[in-house]
Image (cartoon, rainbow, N blue to C red):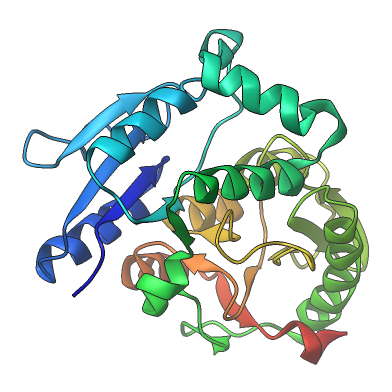
Length: 276
């Protein structure tokens, strides 16, 4: 018998995939939807849910307890919060004070959040433990294959991305013809791609590489791509996208690859060890 699942839902389509999985498999679940992130068209009256701001962790914990949730998955994108979003309830204030937010990077905060959730008697699961088929597989996923130049750019990007990850800076790097056009910071992958479009050089387009940080917990914030990533890559003149195989998520894989083939963009499930 499956334990009741709490889904902390950010943006994007993956929370929908998880909700549908629970429905199809008759698994009991409850959704905590993050305001300003989760898709309101997705969370309708047929779905057991509550909306909270990022700063309302106490409200979220209380609701999960009331719903007798035993396992929790945190999934979906979270935008940089506004000051209004961050106005904390008492429970969240205590959490901020305990972990010392200013001294932690993104991974440190997420690890602390996982620990806090589990202190409430729940177990945090990764999406790969519930829906492993969402993880991207190794190899070229569509009809377009990376060129010799692209493979060299991938190798360079992996080197840079691995070091960035160790420093808890970001997951993504764009390299064109051996030159690092940009690295991901707080702005997110979409803005990185757009920004690098302004720096592209003549000739073959660059590649976007997204890898899981070496110290990153598999249960939270896995690198993710989807059709929006593909469209942005095309608009900025990139030749391809690489995502850490077995460690990254691809949203709506069939549609994403169909669009990539149409636009002439390669999508590669990247075994990092092959390019080190």
